[in-house]
Amino acid sequence: MDKIRVVITGIGVISPNGTGREAFGKAIFEGVSGIRPISLFETTEFKVKTAGEVTSFKPQEFLGDKGLRTLDRSTKLVASATKLAIDDSGLIIHDNNSRSAGISLGSTFGSISSISDFDREALTDGPRYVNPALFPNTVINSPASQVSIKFGIRGFNATISSGSCAGLDAIGYALDQMKLGRAGVVFSGGVEELCLQVFLGYYKSGCLAGLKGPEICAPFDKRRNGIVLGEGACVLVLEELELALSRKARIYAEICGFGASFGSGRLNQAISAALEDSGISPSEIDFISSCANSAKDLDCEEAFAIKKVFGKESSRVFVSAVKSVLGESLSASAAFQVAAAAEAIERQAVYPTVNFEEKDGLCDLNYVVNKAKSCKINKALITASSKSGYNSSLIISRCK
Amino acid sequence: MPGVEEEIKNLVATIIEKDPAEINPDANFFKDLGVDSMMALEILAAIEKKYKISIPEEKLTQLTTLNQTIAVAREYIK
Image (cartoon, rainbow over all chains, first blue to last red; front, top):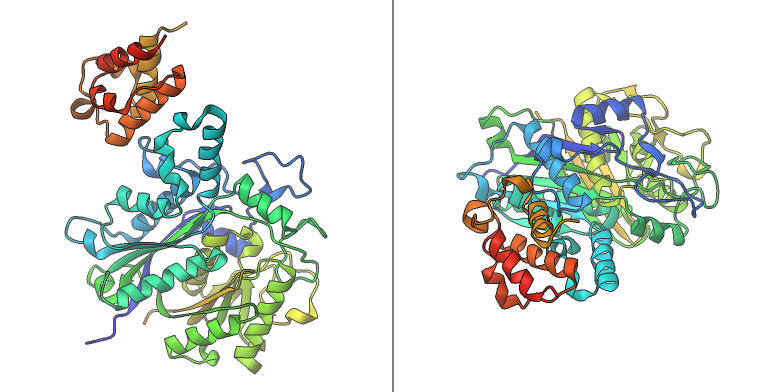
C-alpha cells in the first residue's frame, strides 16, 4: 500500500492582526502588530496593559445570527476560523464524506473563564439558579465538539491541551489518524481566548513583559523580559493528497513529519524526531518558523536547540518568530506558526521578526528582522516549546 | 411594569432567539418553535432565577407552550 501523504488545502485564521488567510499573510509580511491595549477586561490595577487581542470580532459574520448566545469566546473564535478554513479549501462536507472528516484541536485555557462565570453565578445567586446551557462551556473539549455539531463533522473528535505546543500536537495527532486511514480530512489547529483569569495567572507568575522591563514583545532581542499574551484561532484543512488532487484543490504545503519530547531544554529532541519522521536532513530545511515568544529563557533554549541539531547549518537557515506581532496565544500559537510557514512557502519569502534591535549573544541565529526577505523555501520547520516542558516540531514542504 | 406573562414571554423569546411578537402562546415549543431539551432546561432555570422559586423537575414535561409555562410558573410565584 502506498504511503498516505497529507497536505494543507485550507487555512482559516482569526488573529489579532488579521482575519482570514490573506489578511493574516499581508499583516505578518508587513510586520503589522496585533498587540494593543487590552479592552476585554480592566487593566488599571495592573502594570501590564497590552496583549494580542482580536478586536472587532463579529462571529455572526461567519456563523449567522442564531445559536451563538450560549457559546463562549473560544468556541466562537474557532468555529469562525473553521468556517474560513472550509471556505478557503472549497471542501464541501456532506453525508457521504462527513464520517471520514475529523477534528483535532489544541485548546488549553478556553474553559477557565466559563468555569469562573458558572461558579460565580452559583455563588452569587445560589446553585439552584445556574444556567444549565452554560455548563457545556466548562469543559475543555467544548470548542471542538461545537465545531463538529456546527459543521456536521462526524469522524473522530479530539482536543489536546499542551499549552503552546497544543496546536502542533493536534496536527501531529491528525497526521497519525490520517496515516492510519482513520480520516481523509481533518480540521486541525488551535484556539485560545484572552481573559482575565489567564492574564492573572501569567501576571502573578511574573511571566509577562512589562513587569521587569519595557512592555515589548521582542523575540530573540536582548531587551526581552517576558511574554505578551495573545489570542485567536487558526484551523487548517488537512487532506489526503489523493483526495486533494482528485478535486483539484489548491495545495499550500505537504505535512512531512512530526516529533515531540518532554522536559526542559529538550526541544532539540523534538526537532530531531520530526526530521527523522520526515526522512530529511537539517541541510534541507530552508526556514524555521520559531516559537520564540520574548521569554528570557525559552528564546535562548530554542536558539540552543537549533544550534545543537543544525550545527554549522544554523548560520544558514532563516529563522523568524511570528509571535513578535501576535503575542503568545498559547494553544493557537503553533497553528499560527504553521499558517505563517505555509504563507512563507507560498510567497517564497520570510516574514520578519519585529522589535528586533539589540542582538543577544546567546541567541545568535540567522534571523529575518524588521523587514520581509525573499528567498527559496522548499521545506520549513515549525517549533513549539512551553515552560511546562512540552516540546514539539513539525516539518512542512512545498508540494511537488 | 410588565406582568408575569410579558416577563416570561421575553425570557422564552431570548432563549429561543425569536422576537416576542412571533411567539404564539399556544404554539408547541418543540414542534413549532424549534426548542430543544437544553433550551427547555434553560427556560425552567431562567424562570426559577427570575422569581427566586423552585419548580420541581417533573414539571418540565408540562412546559410545552408559552401559556402552559406561564401557568406552571404561576403555581409557584407568590
